[in-house]
Length: 511
Image 1 (tube, one colour):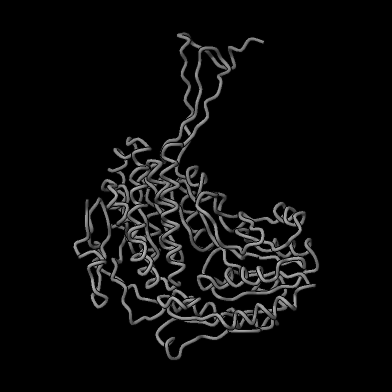
Image 2: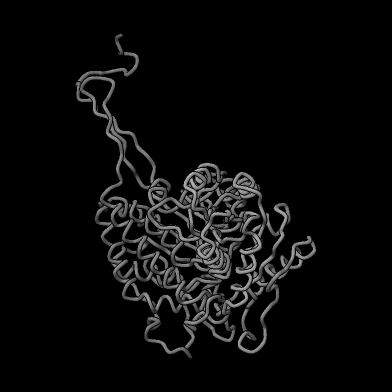
């Protein structure tokens, strides 16, 4: 099996700078460009996590060529055998969970409890997809003609390009890579430039589990230099992107030109409804976790809380009191509850929306400021921020902020709450807190979103159910569960005629 030319991370001290190379055709190689970029800790920018290759189109071409060569053999490996390697990768990830979690906290910023969950999600995905290697069911159906057998089977798509985000750098990479390889595809993945190490760690585990060379290839770098040529490459037959709606429109347009399979998982502006009969203690806990977990940097973050007027004042008073007490800091400190923004640009975006909210007339009840003194001096920190009396049409209630900014909106009743919840361009996740089963089922039916939670926040998806949304959240494909198998395979219908004569299907039918 291929190994890095440097010592593995476990053998390095914190003071040593790690240099990571692209992984192409089973070898760790420098970028053809000869350029690199730094990966720094957003909680403490003095902490250099590693140096990565600043790749270009030539590196993409080399990776796709390797994947193309590997596909010729990999597609013929029985799916259960492919799945066994994924299962072994899960066992390796369990052994390295703490190491990889700490790496992720350093490069992404979210607290250790959350990065452990991120690695665990990759483990769960590996176990689930390992099972799919022995299923991949297809229908067998009776033929309309005698002495004829009819069935449909799944076949791999071919070479798959993947572009992953920085907020769940191992979990989302696993959602793409693991089902793709179990289905018999080969892959080229471009991790987000802010968090490449976690994807490298996942692929290292896959390689150590015995995956043949060329089946998975990593090319690190920036979108225009790596992502665009990957999406444009003629030999790439499927492209899977998790990112912004803006980038999704670009990638979707590129894919359409050559009829590639294209899966886009994009933005969200997710509502949590709290009705008068809700368990208020539970709703407050859920709203805090959904709004400020991962510093609000989730496509499923609870960025809007829609509260019925009967409990509006009680909810906001207690919610704001709790939000003010959240401990912000370096995620390596186990007592910290919220980490930094991923980078300066994202922090400035968050702060700009605070000004937008104030100018729109929403009431800023807590937060809204950058934290940059003392322990926060070298990081991209912001206070947990809550606006109340937000009009549903305000920009802070319509646009994805991707930061620790929560808008609280009053509503009259369930029907009004659902109208507000649906009144956006996105449709990813949604939730409702109520003790009334009739209202819960009405919300399940009428909330126009890909995910709905009852008495839970808008975050917490599990790998064995489809993940994705409606409207501007994506293009209809789903990750996770059977949705991933659907995307990474194509159907082939097979007819076996053992009548030993020409049968002309519907033409030969005699009524």
